Amino acid sequence: MRSRRRLARTLPNMTHRLTDPTFWTQPLNDRMLEMGTFREAEPFTEVAFTNEFTGEQERFFAVTRYDDVVAISKDPKTFSSASGAISIVDLPPDALEFFGSFINMDNPRHQRQRAIVAKSFTPTELANVLDSVETIVTEVIDGFCEEGEVDLVKALAQPFPLLVICDMMGIPRSEFDTVLNATNIILGGGDPEFVGEGDPMTAILGAGLELTNLMNELADERRKNPTDDLTSKLVHADVDGEMMAPEEVAPFFILLAVAGNDTTRTALSHGMNLLSQFPEQRAAWQADVDGVTGTAVEEIVRYSAPVTFMRRTLTTDFEMSGHQFAQGDKVVMLYGAANRDPRAFDQPEVFDVRRSPNPHVGFGGPGPHFCLGANLARRELAVAFREIFKRLPDIEVVGDAVPLDAAGLPLVGGIKHLPVRFTPTAPTS
Image (cartoon, rainbow, N blue to C red; front, side, top):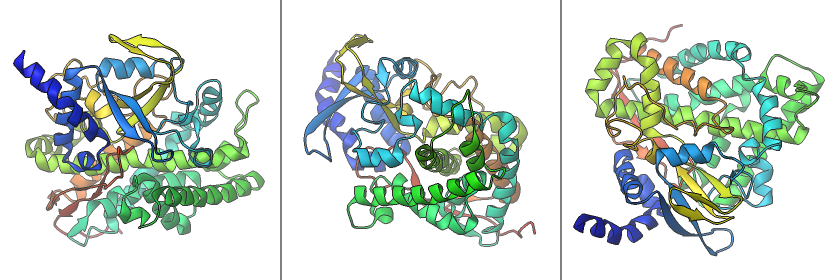
């Protein structure tokens, strides 16, 4: 009883730390342990914050237990994605213009647009893309394998998944740096290294505009001259008489370039760092690459939870796990905390590359908003680590992982620098 009272007294200060930037620059396990304290104290933790657009005090409820995250994900009628956005604060209309793809929609709009996109994400349609993943990772490793010491994020984790997406969409390689710089700004969460010294929201909107203009030009070209890339398929897709409107193509590309890219990018960086922290797990994986890769990839996503959160908004008064929510309340699902819930996982703080079963929510909870690109991300991670083990078998982390310096609670808990060393090898060609 004494320990429960002491825990309750410490919660107000700890609750505030969820919106404190220093909370998110802690090592991964330190912040996960703190979120575990919220989770074990109560199912929903009330968090007060200042809305950066209005200057007003607002609140959200942090959802940290696995069963609650799953239940909310399965109930889009009660927990809306379209009421203001999936970010902590409601996005202004000009921001939603760039970032308003179907991730910020409810049915029927969500169902309509996702159905059009999903037609291009079937296993058959993705077959050529999945094959190209191996070619691209080989190309990227060729670019640094002779150096012996690199920043793994800049050398591999950053370019590799984005090159896959650009090639898939038909973005010319000459525009790759433009896309990379813009996505770094959008994903950086206000990190000065990416947005500079100016206003972060101005920089993010500028990056969104740059990607929108690039994508609109490409979509116009594909309408006139169809090819076999995803952009052409999207602008010509017809699902039950429905086609993607011109203004819907660019927001989808931004979603794919940002969310689709960064799940792999962040999981790759965290995965390499985790293997350095748990050498016995690395040894087990390298000893049986074919047998362990599938479960190891899932465990990296569970343990690191690249996507930090998604918000939903209550459409009605509703009771869950003994808590009475009111219409308009915001709930923020913290996937990392749910992925370490001992009610759902045996020894959740243990990193186990052979863990099975592993029903993590690292790609989102089950339901209509489950990550459409999950299988592509799995393929990218599997191929990347196979090639690393094959071509750079003695690669080791030689410095601290540098986290994103986000302005608040980041959408992606990324690593922006990870120094590694390995025996130099020759390119494949």
